[in-house]
Every structure is written in structure tokens, then in C-alpha cells.
Amino acid sequence: MQKIVLFLGFLLSTEVVGDFLILECSKVSNWIDNKDIAFSLQIGTSTKKVLQVFQNRQLQMQLKETVTHFEIGQYTDASETTLIPVLKVNKETLMADYSNLKKEPIFCKKV
Image (spheres, rainbow, N blue to C red):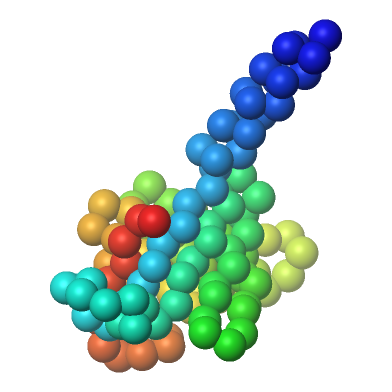
């Protein structure tokens, strides 16, 4: 019985990990030092929630996933049809194609 519970726990935990992505984002693309990290994004693709973590604060936002981008922001109402994006991260390049935070490019990498 314990083996079945452990197996099911492992199976479910790998499913959760598959639906969770952590990105570290920076204004520089060379990643020499951890001091260059501006923030990290903890993206829950199944929960459609994103936690943006800065050095001294956190923001919880919502996720709209398209074929090409992770769009991060807030929906205008409970129907979740219109998202006001704060950040759009290209899934292939992991570069923020749009950000209302800074006008400088933002580079991200998977952790």
C-alpha cells in the first residue's frame, strides 16, 4: 500500500513540476553575476498564476498563454477575457518582447 501511495505521489509531483516554470530575468544578457538579476517569474501554466519576485517584494499576477508568448498581467474582470499585460515573454527566445516596467530589453533564462 505504501508503495502505491509513494508511486502516486511521485507521479502527481512530476505532473505539477511539468506545469511550473521559473525564469530569472535581467537587463543584461551575459549572466555573469547573480546581482544582474532584476526579478524572477514563477509561472504556473496550469493554475494561470504568476508570481513576480523582486529583491524586497512580490507581485501576484495572472497568466494568459498564447502559442508564442507568456502574457503576464491582470484580467479586467472575472470573465477573464481581457488581460492588461505588464510583460510579454517570448516562449522561444525567453526575451520580454513587451514590458511596461522598463524601456530597456529584458532577458530571461530558465532555472
